[in-house]
Image (cartoon, rainbow, N blue to C red; front, side, top):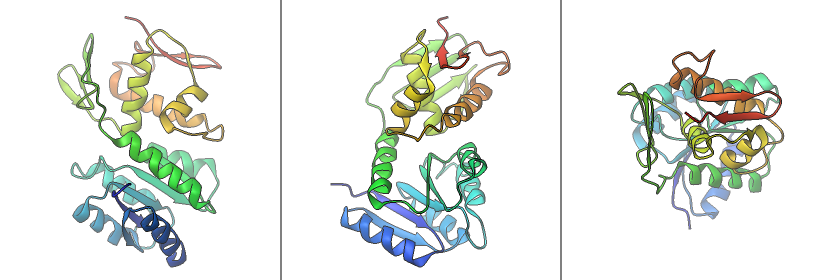
Length: 230
């Protein structure tokens, strides 16, 4: 049974109570805050295993909270699921670009929320593999979840690292966007293939010498991506 600690940051008390009740029924430890500032402080003090973060918050909105978390070395590793009442693609993509691991649009079913929490928790656990891959100026350590470029550490989000790992393990194979969504996100992502494109773009900016002319991650137009065989 799970005993992970989840922080809910949402200004709607009825939503907080509903999520809190169901998480506790599933043996999660629950913390909560009703505004962005309080939520950020609790995240820094308690270091939860996962954060459910509403976008529309008083004092500091969810985007700014996400930014602050990802700038803080002590808590940047904490996975974030963003909660939003908005359905615009802009909101979804912006959240992912800021480092959120997932998003769910209100209203949502508790069953779906629990499934997504479990999927993100599962992905966030340390890989058992101790394999180290060396590619020219890149060193990828699957056990440490660490990437070095020309001897310097590259800061990747959890999703970016998992994407890189999956591409490398399937080096030379063309992986479709839908395949990448299913394998990394762990469930049907309702055709939001732009999610993959956003993460690939960020990954290229971090590992490629020239992200406009990538040497590692190749785009296969209309299909997906592949990691080039060196």
